[in-house]
Image: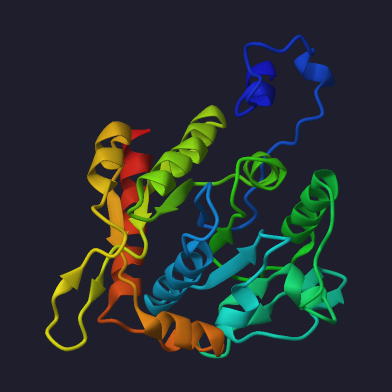
Length: 282
């Protein structure tokens, strides 16, 4: 009993609290087959775009997908996915809104705000309570895979997700800059402390292609992806280019239309394959 209570707590082994008196929540997983978080540690690396593209790729494969926007103070998922309006409450819980193309079920703070330009100025405990409420009070229906868009950083919000929801693992997002790599590794250390598996890493804005000759441009310098992969022994899930179509489709709520070959589906396939490997080796 004590081992289960302490497992996943960052203070495990150095805490004087009796486990029977500890109020740390026991993570739950509902009826989902897979629960995948997407994190970065650093803002501005396109984590929400990767979260949305992963959900799109999974849905295109025929999975019933839900997307929880846990970035309470900087939510962007509804805009990219073309979803707006107030979710309705029922005796079974909050009914998430569905994306127009693939029917991805979405819950986000932005859906509960009359004016989405207004800031959410809340302290950590209140943000954590809202994330817990989104998780516990939403009726996800028959959705089988949940993707969670984590906020940047290693503070209250991602900690609440890791302590409340039984994650299968986390996909890390970085960009080629050494600064981004250093900060994403802070969150990777956090997941290790919380005993949450690392599924793999995605390098976003990895390169650009000349529209005239197809020459590759490494706009942000050389990639450090292989160094991170080797240090952490995790797979590279995707290297996504700088593509103005992602901006165009995302800004107009049509990200589900983004193709670029079958890149979202390939990323989704690699994530599921990495999850199977984690289950096999655990």
